[in-house]
Amino acid sequence: MNVYDFDGTIYDGDATVGFIFYTVRHHPLVMIKSLPKQISAVVAYLVGKSDKTRMKSQFFSFLQYLNDVEGDVRDYWDKNQHRIKAWYLAQQRADDVIISASAEFLLEDICGRLGIQHLIATRMNRHTGEISGKNCKGKEKPGRFYEVFPEGKIEGFYSDHDSDRYMAALAKKSYLVKKNELSDWPFSGKDA
Image (cartoon, rainbow, N blue to C red; front, side):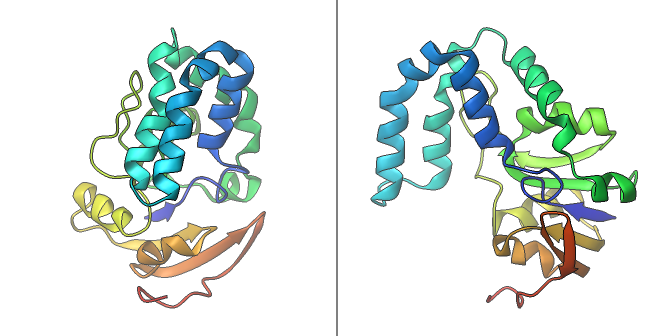
């Protein structure tokens, strides 16, 4: 199996940031209402009084004010599906796995459209923003991968960021993705 990071790797952009901006454009009053809690969450994270998982949960509390989260996610992907990178579509396989820090509810729709059956991502409640477990990033990814695939063998791993070095160390071959260019993974193992 091949395993892919999503944001910046097979998708040209960051789906989380994109969906936040989508919500600002389409539901500005929701975002204005949520702004004090979001600012407080970011400040607490920046001064070390909160971790990224808690900050992300509080930031996404705006979801509670959306009437049709599923419809908004569909509309977001209607407008952004074209940003899935051509190199990925050309080599896509049935056993591909997407592993991402983005929320599962946000990536389920696009993975369904692409026929991707295996998605591992941050478990976030689509109606409250509350995260179950930890943000699926960095050291968290291998543990989440082995929860789903206890005997999983990764042929190729693809990512745009060195925070994925923990996943890269598990693969027979790892690739760094920059825009549409793939190169050998330049970072050393788990201690990089």
